[in-house]
Image (cartoon, rainbow, N blue to C red; front, side, top):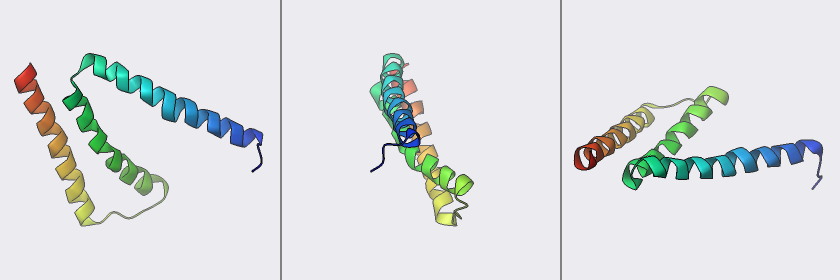
Length: 88
């Protein structure tokens, strides 16, 4: 492995943005909302992956994937509506 400047800058960016920032945002979120509401957003991760694949890599999405996206979004909305009803 060659420890080039490009490699080190990408590793630093991944460490800071992909790990440290995500870790800090998660705990900052948990200070404001309940765990069950915050955890529902973890289900959005595959949707972000689908979006990145479609936008940046020209991947073609099929109908079943759109149904899956809809199901995930409905689930996240229901969790938030139920949590808001139960916890105010």
